[in-house]
Length: 320
Image (cartoon, rainbow, N blue to C red; front, side):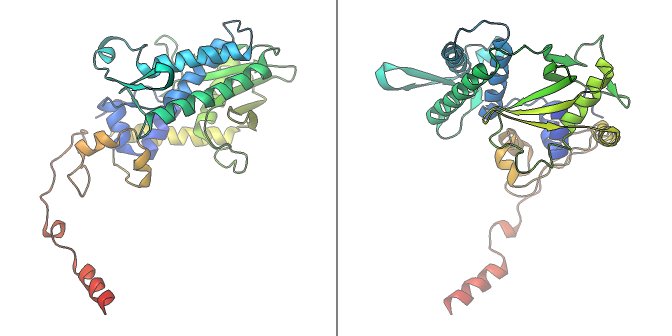
């Protein structure tokens, strides 16, 4: 039986999206190159946290440090220990004898140079706009504030251990606001269905009220690409939902129910390559017993060699 441990919004999302992906990531701890989108998001979060601890004199100086940080992280300069030892760096010679170094710890796809500079430019735009907007505004009362991470400060919802991080908490004359930074390409401007129901924000609301003893005025989805901020709220009905969801996810993990869910979303999964190693060759899928162990594969059948009858019939019809 698998240990549930501390759940989080990302763990819940992973498990509900594909049980096998959860198994590979959190049970087997399979290592894969980080997706460039997630790395970019984390680096932007780091820069926004740094904004309030370093007195940058201009949007340009803020963006200049971003270029240094992004370039260094992509090259693997911040890696340590075994991750550093396993690093393989590919060099690209560009104009003016500039050499771009990209490590294999990040998955950049088929156009690593173009994607590297695309995200660098996007980061510049986001951070310059953020600087201009927030330089003369009061800082948040808390930033990157975690809950449930320390052993001596456990946090539970309906008996389940939960951990998370508030990107920022602000207090105004009206009350408290919880803000979550998002670097997503799309915003919930036209479709707010998910925004008003997402478990992440429900967990934040529940945790805030328990930790601060007050009800927040709103949870803010800060869409950094556009600079737009979207409000959402939570009620007791939302808390009832999250409790049931946590019950379901916790039971599934504890009983080692890691049924894979295959679909076109697999094309965007960080564990697709690893999944291939666990899956039955060419057709079918992995079979996982209650202890989370992968069982053997079936032999190929004649179907894998000869086309099925209906394909031959279709070919004959076309010839007529």
